[in-house]
Amino acid sequence: MEIPFKTLSDNARIWIYPSDRKLSDNEVIEIKELCSEFIAKWTSHNNTLLASFDIPYSRFIVFGLEVDFNSPSGCSIDSSVHFIQYLENKFNISLLDKMNVTFKQGQFLTHKTLNDFKSMVKNGSVNSETIVFNNLVNDMAGYRSEWEIQMKDSWHSRFIK
Image (cartoon, rainbow, N blue to C red; front, side):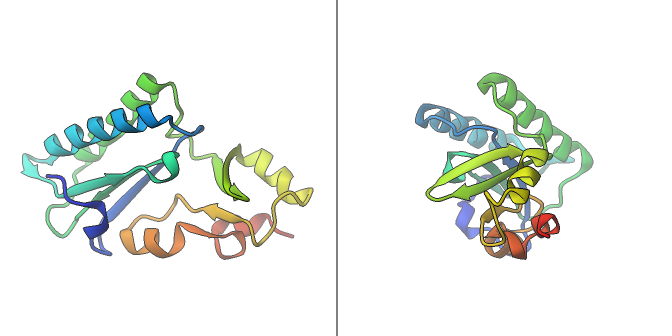
């Protein structure tokens, strides 16, 4: 069952899927419809899941699930990954590659491979003040406070010398 994303509790489990490119307005509309349909049918051992999604910056698909209502099972998590793979194929985007970094450059979001990002750190194109997206957060509390964060406060800081 879908609930508003902003109402998810701090305990809600979060999965963040960064797109390798900005989604068009039409793609966002279609993805929102598909995500709503998926969440309406998303269950764990035939139990309803209380969930939501968001598409911030037209660059990320974020699923949130109230684990205190019903916990996800391995099969329900697998079904969400299969759904994300379906979106990857349908829209010709990459969402599951965790070896990429998305960060802000001025008003724009940039998506680079981890190796390219490391090179940018070395040559000074990005620094400890650069806003990065920490897609490893796994609950709503972390999403609210640690997702969009300065590099020096993120796991990305290991690349700063």
